[in-house]
Image (cartoon, rainbow, N blue to C red; front, side, top):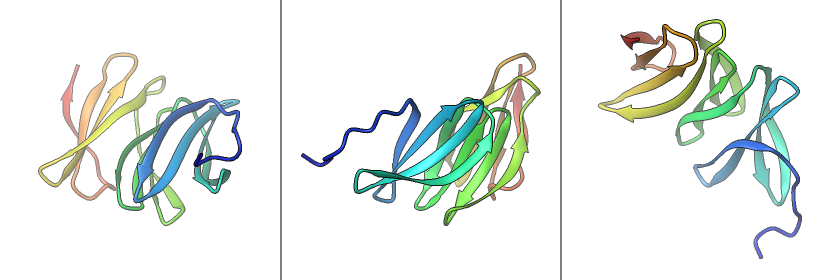
Amino acid sequence: MWFKTRLNISATDIKNIDGVIYVAISEGGNCRVSKLENGELEDVIIVEGSPCVLLWNRKNRFLVSAGNVLYFVSNNEFRSVFRAGHRNWFWHGVEACNKVFIQEYGESPTGIYVSEDLENFKLLVSK
């Protein structure tokens, strides 16, 4: 068996990113993203906000939604890059045509945003 220890966590998302398992955990109003290695969790990012969702990744770079804030994570460092409406959050992220698209959920107006550099997001469509 691959795991020798059973972990008791409430994961909101999980992804294999460049051979490393990352787990998103919403707990106590915070977003915690950890690496799972050798049956142990090692924290990468802990920020305020919930839900906590891993949206998009390429190699060791990924986008995390923590409440209404979007974070860019690279080499275990992170920074806030975009905000949704007050009670909204980002729920999906995809890559196409060398661009990353993220979808905002929650109270209207919501939108789909696009970025070419993962730092500047522009509204593509709103409803």
